[in-house]
Length: 289
Length: 324
Image 1: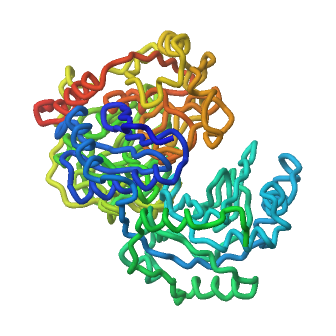
Image 2: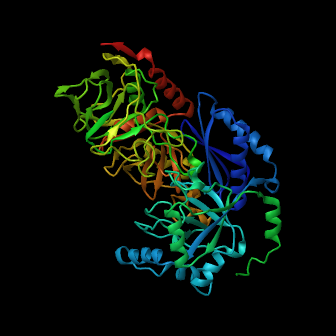
Image 3: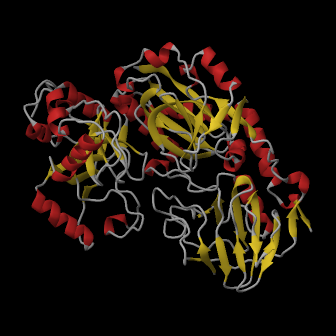
């Protein structure tokens, strides 16, 4: 639920957390990202960095430049300036990311977990059943049928946390317990209400439903798309997964390796929360693809 | 240029304050944990306090100087010898070409800093030379020192024989017990009154399963308020679960019943609550404490934490230095 007034919570001598509500209502993320944008435009005194998430924003500040109390006042002023959430418009690029759904590599991850930790069904079949879908194929159809909103880029470098913008494509599933000890790089996972892409091959808790061959960050900045940036996505970008087969996965992998892969990212749109909400209200969210 | 003969235990290039402004890309700040000793090391050799230098952890490296250099060691005592002669801590020293600096395990403290006049000269990544090992970036090729590798050093104008005044040294305890400052929040209201009292009145043991990502603490159980139990289902099922939120550096992050102090290389976001936060004035203590040592926590206000930080910053100046 959205709070009547945002809460301000201290984090030691150099952080303040602004919380807009206590659940994962997508409006709360729009507000957190709206405030992030407003802080940057305002160049608020003493602010070093911002770290937005589902319903909150952590702001890092330098206390030699601004006190906790004064920073709270500045943030209240900027939040006041945002107006209602419907009025928010955010810069939002659309990234088309190739995805092989129901791929063999994440299938191996699940098998490895089953053998070494605790037995479990193949994740896509399990998630499909939980969500009243016919089968894993329909899960792939539903998951690739929407733009996914980048809530935050966080946790490990370049890792996007995403929510489906089309309510007909919403998927919920519990995370692994206990977590996996390894996950293949580029794995596409769903957990809670979210989708993520593994940008390091470490532990993880999301259910694995596919894999992308493209990197989401490049510390060496080798590929042309990374010339002026280290990570591919920003919060408030959108991702559209483009289903591919194993041959195309191999083709794209080879183009990544030889440095000629051309990323497909459009950057001319702004996201209007008001227009989006109007569209959502017109849908029958019970119908699946 | 300096050649690496032995690496020590994950010895890394760091700078202060580290990689700032990159949370939104998923990068923590990295940088030295004991940033007080780190800055004093740089001042001794005539550098800017935040210039890139080495952080040695538990066991120091062995290095060979390929050219004359001025260097200084601060922090924990790793029994450093230059061509077999003990090297004093907290003092700038001249090394000649071909001389070897050999270090061992820490006798006191846990981290020793080695600064070189001119600073470690590696290219910055996202505005910082700090190594982020998990992200394989910053420092020298995004990794700790490697045997046979070389450490490039910039041009400096340091002189030997400068030392930190005794009264300006970080006061390392000699009984393995630390009083660590904490501030309440952001999620202290998820812990009930008895749990808050228990946290502040108990002794906590620093687990050996600790590193620059987080320091794991062993101690009594936590108890929660209704807020932690009666919450929207997307928060998760455990009382310590919350909807993913950004993590302050220094947060005492509660996963189930295990508190972990999130350090310089932490994950930037996650789904556990942070009842308390260790402010920056206590980070030098974290950096110098050893596994199985004991923490007790001192609750202070944000304003007090900021005042203590300013007091430490004030000692990171030329006024703290005298000629030996």
